[in-house]
Length: 220
Image 1 (tube, one colour):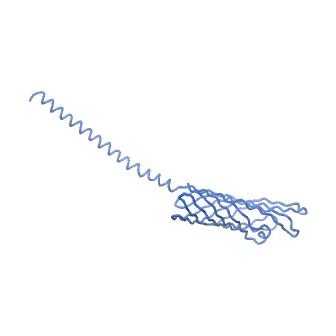
Image 2 (image 1 turned 90 degrees about the vertical axis):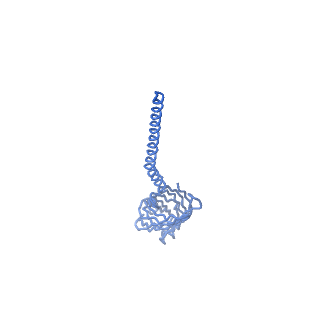
Image 3 (image 1 turned 60 degrees about the vertical axis):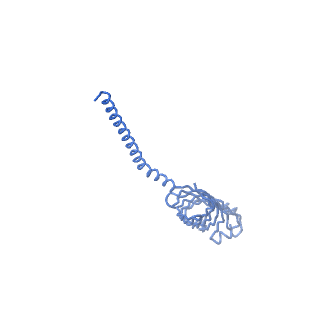
């Protein structure tokens, strides 16, 4: 066998060996990519799912406050309240939120001599709600705790123009329904009841009231 043939045979063997090494390297690279994809894809999907499960919502409500107590209603009457709020949908329709109620400010004649008086109320509310998610409608129920401020003043010279400005807390019970004409924008109808009894002067005053309100909101 000539030297030239031997060189050709050895060259062919070396070439085949190099090709086999390249194929093995490519197979290992693809195997690593597949393994990495299998490890990372579920984690990414879980992150996406977690992000989808958490959403933020903000809205504004406005409506009449109906006073339950007959004497308070006769003196001051019902009023209009405003209620901006924000909440976090953190788990399968459970919402944790914060709202501020303001706007009730009424004047009336009080007492035997029909003296001028005013009554103002506002409150900060924390609430937990559950929302039943449907296609376009989402009814909900909520339970909250409110810190309310009430101020009553009477213009009476014999009594020294008494004024009280105090705070009282109470639980809040409510519910409502949201309608989504578009994907994230919604119209909200809400009703809640606040059982609130205060003692501005010597006698207890029942400030229980039902708030029926409507408004709009947006989910982020």
